[in-house]
Amino acid sequence: MNTPTRQARHARAAVAALFLTNGAVFFNIVPRYPQIREDLHLSNVALGSAIAAMPIGALLAGLLAGAFIRRFHSARVAAFGVILTTVTSLTVPFAPNGFGLAAALFVFGALDSVIDVAQNTHGLRVQRHYGRSIVNSLHGVWSIGAVLGGLMGSAAAGLNLSLGLHLTISAVIFSIVALAAYRFLLPGPDDSPTPDPAETKTDQEPIKAAAVRLLAALGVLAACGALVEDAGASWGAIFLTDELHTDAATAGLAVVAMQVAMTIGRLTGDRAVDRFGQRTVVRYGAALGAIGMAAALAYPTVPTALAGFALAGLGVATLVPAAMHTADELPGLSPGTGLTIVSWLLRAGFLLSPPLVGFLADQFSLRVGLLTVVAAGVLTLLFARVLVNRTAAPIH
Image (cartoon, rainbow, N blue to C red; front, side, top):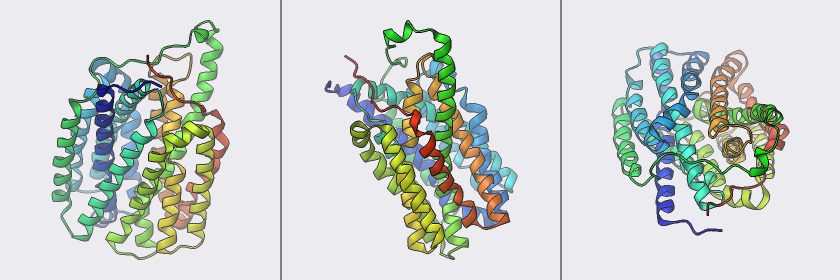
């Protein structure tokens, strides 16, 4: 294994900082959903539909990510994209109704989808210089950012800080971090993995047909990961507020519990993946998350609910990085195509989850709506067989 250069180590720290800001900016908003719902007089399904505007924007813009990255390079798109999202977040406090909230989240989602691909493109580029898995740790730092943002949002809610002032503080802090990180990212155009000579001799049509089937399966896995993450982000605080009658500060801890557990899983995930393989780690995680959430819904209290969200987060910790890594290495596709498509399908999961859970919550109860998390765990167990069980080869 090669020892990474100083430039590669700096680039890893810089891209990790961008992952952190990307998680923190959005999750500053999440604990304020109960207040936003109350201020705008929205039902659960109306709030869920407004939240769904974010993945709609992501779906419409996500397939353009490759073109932006080729034109401006992943470093520039990731860093300056974060700054644009902080500016967009400042429009949320001025939303006059559900449609205005949906419009703000639509733009946020469109920007975030492009940034997501750019961050992962740069992170996988750095990983190739390391010659071992680091992508889970990068997603772990994203989760740290989400925890940080969730704590900031929960504290702001508990202190009755105005949403406008709260998000302005967030925007200033994380814009500065993004600008500081930019200068340490890898310069120049984005490279791609060296093709395997054996693959170039294989008939390309069967490879492409197989790649399409694998992309579909990877898309299901990514969507399952999105659904579980969205359960904590969009509905965790509302579940504790409506079902368990907690105060605003306590309710915000649902997403924090999920993201803390997810962070632990991702920061330790690289070692687990290198030792046991992505497929094994994802399958055991899916079972853990499904069982944990099922138990929490069967016996709902504040401690069991927080534990359930935590186990769900721990269970899917390596799922999305694994799907992205596998997609990025699919043969028969041009560089970046697999990653862009799976990232786009990931957004479909974020699109379907809020209105689905909101509909089930209004028709039955939020406890019933959150059974979708258990279903996502079962689907992950079935589809995880398509994941690779190796890491990237080092660059010599």
